[in-house]
Image 1 (tube, helix red, strand yellow):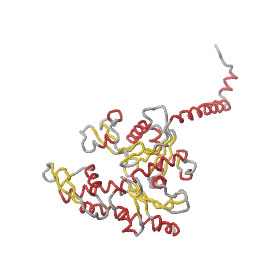
Image 2 (cartoon, one colour):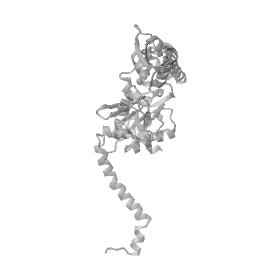
Image 3 (cartoon, rainbow, N blue to C red):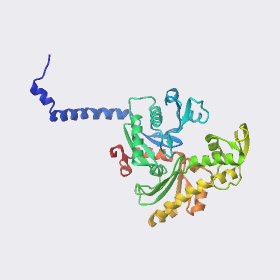
Image 4 (spheres, helix red, strand yellow):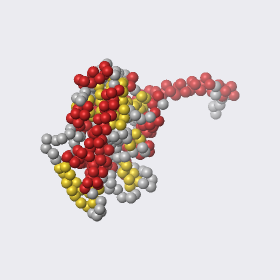
Length: 378
């Protein structure tokens, strides 16, 4: 039987040999990690309060699903081995029995439920990888500008536990600016307003950084809440958030229409408790959306007032670029222009601007390295 002398054992236990062993292990694992990385699908993720979009290098947006997960209340386990995530789970909102809960694990752009967020990310990453659990991708995740260092670390840890090999964070306005092909790396000011589900991100970008920025917790969800409150107060009708979102998308507006619209809404009578239907018009929906739209415009005005004079001169020509799901609200650009006196436009395909930006960012990590926040900074 092979043995070692006492001197040999002391040598093996020496700091020199321990460092040598560690070095050999690292040198062995590095090529292994590189080889596994060759088979992974690196991705950019717009982890939004309302929707999660995934962009893959060379393929564009390949996943766009609601940030909703259905879980069992007693165990917290995701239903049907993860199948009740995204579109399937959103269809359950407001319709689940007592033992099941359909929840949104993110609130105002930050993680409210870490375990469920991890499970949701794992489901999306595995779906993009087509079930290959043994490969781990590099992931770029867009986050609100106003979140704390603790919240940033929480996003990184959740993505790592969900199967990411390396995680980078980028602020949502920067990702949106990159996705809209704005000159964010040049010495020229660009103003981006990202109206999402939980937050509105506003930033003036120049030289690959944010000159001034803010995160406003008034966005699409607050618009839906305003519609729910209006129907309850003025029509004595109780509706859910999905019905409110349909009303917003169908007849909602921030500026007068050439031809005003109306639609039938179904819900529960708040007096009798019985099912009932009523008709609402685009005029009354616009009136109930007036306050959240005005608050967003006021936040943009505050950012414009903070911007340096030279940046303001640039914005006279470039104006305001609107992205996010809230940018799809009819007349939102006209309302911003009217209230601020600055030209505003809705970007092409505003819903996917942030996700497109994360994909471009992933392709050009060397170019955008100065705006990078990696897990090495933890």
